[in-house]
Image (cartoon, rainbow over all chains, first blue to last red):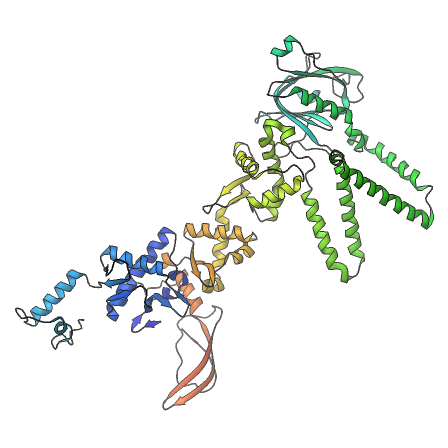
Length: 142
Length: 484
């Protein structure tokens, strides 16, 4: 099976119609569903937080079959994520999108749990420390 | 019942009268009663369609449950009475009276000894003077005599023709005689052409001669191409096909015109169109574009062209009476004519089997691929593909390679586990088709303990079982293997 980095790609990633925004309603709904899940899973495993619509995002193109998502298609799928609450637009022009592969609430819970576990309550920590400090290493978080 | 006195007329499937060769329609009137005051036993034919042609007067009943059609040959008419304008005639519907010869039993016949007066009561909105004028013209024109006879006098005309040709042959002998005969024929053809093109009215009457000429030319071409050598064959084949197309397009000798049908124009046009459309429909594979029919129909009519609006109205009238064809509008706005018996599902199943072939699984199908398989025009094939997409059988793929369609795999993908593939389904079939490759090893290189392979990869037919493994390291010679 093909991989993108360490992410295992499903078989339908090589199906050309997967990269064309389908006009028929039922087909499009299924297509959107598959793309939403793929984007979330990929971002989670590859630790991607922000997707820029104008940039070359690896998941959005498949050189093997020479197909890539059009701008319209990318916006459609990301907007679907935003409506579901799993992403947020960072700007009004819909150029950059923040992917929340954990929901914000989940993130909050995670941080809280991390802090409790390590007895860091009542102390002040910088974001950097939380990200890559001694305690965070090895916990598999961010 | 009317058959006792008046012979029955033959009708086509759409209710139009079958005309004899050389017979042309002159006028159509609706709501006409036909009866005879002299004979009480003569049936009263009420409210029918009256069609005047160069040879006959036809009466068709408008009642679709009991369709009757009878005719009176113009040759049996002895006298047409002129209309008397009186105060009484202002209040009644206009009447046309004429006298026909009949046998003693009352059958209408050319050589009958007795006579009978028949009255036509024109109840619809008609211009009686113009109809009367045409009636007189048709009767006086005696077209049935010049067109070489009705079926009754068949053997008679045969012998007449024979004696004529005998009379011509006697003085013409020898090579010079043959040459002179050819010359005479050319001169008469030339004169005929000149006469025809000088006067349009004369052209109309010469039209039949033109058709006969065209037929003769075609036969000459046919016999000519059989004798000649292969060099000139291509040329001849081209012109032969041209001639055939030409003749198809002059298939209609009697166009329904606004003049001859008046208010019934669209109805009669509609029926004529239904008859005409059968042959091109078959040639086009069961579905033909409205624009194509417009061109073909107008070419066939020759002079009395119809407007696109007339065509559209004529097609929409088909719903009102029983015809084997129907007008259909696709979502994209394209309008086509197709047989009522045509089934979309049959076409869809054909498309489905086409799109499940290994090539189509890998690269999909385009409108032209479908057109070739289905035997229809590419524009029609595209409509079918879009319709199949709308039903969920196909998916589109838009890229720089063009607009292609694939079998719709989305329903086969499990929503819970994107990696799951059911055995023996369409999904696994597709995966096999796109995954199997034939790898040709062209070179290898040893670097330390590893071997680096150079290879070219190609697609091949899906005939191999699944579950093949990667062969590694052991091979040191260029070799074929399969990998997933």
